[in-house]
Length: 254
Figure 1 (cartoon, rainbow, N blue to C red):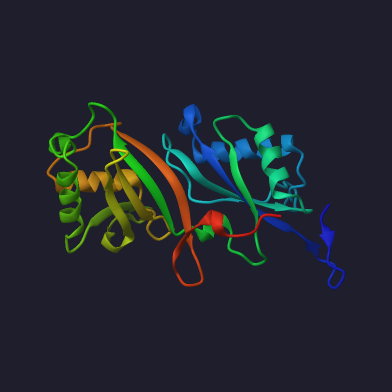
Figure 2: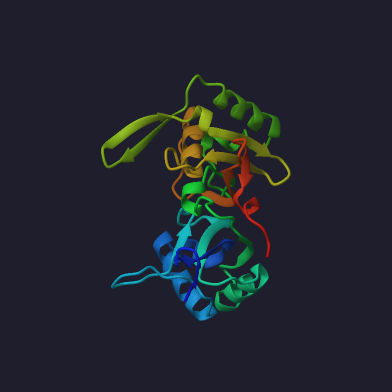
């Protein structure tokens, strides 16, 4: 049971943000399965998670931007509402002991009061993107062997007056100019992969695969099916000055 505030007799809750990874075979499970997975993990971890009221109470948790199936990540986030305080390191250890190696808590922070939840806080996501061996589009085979050619191709792509992405929603397809929503797109010579920071807010939510499809199309090529290896490095929110910061920077360790 949660504590109560003596002034108004309302329950007092404690919110925590968990950064977690998703690797290996579990990168192929969808977002709903991840949510169900953590419901079981939190029960096994025997933490004092808060539940909703009503006939069918459920754990009060909020997840950040859903990860596309097949993408690995070290930048996933989940907010947990607790009835009682717990040390951040203890909560992390309990989750990991109840979890599996493919999904592990990397850090835990105690959130300040009235902070936005994980889903509402998402502003951007950072990716590393590479082609699987032998799956490069024809238009990039000669380019990828020379870093300067890759960089020139990216520069030309980003210099367009507009970069149009067709998004399909309940109202049908619509064209969205994402030029200003590609916060970074570059070539990482050391890791031989593309690096991107893309708007991941509810209004845009640009996927790394969509960016690569547009880039390849700009070069008069076409992506081969299942040709990309995508890794989400982190997920970002904005600070009081509207700067992008890691969601891991919000809160404190207790």
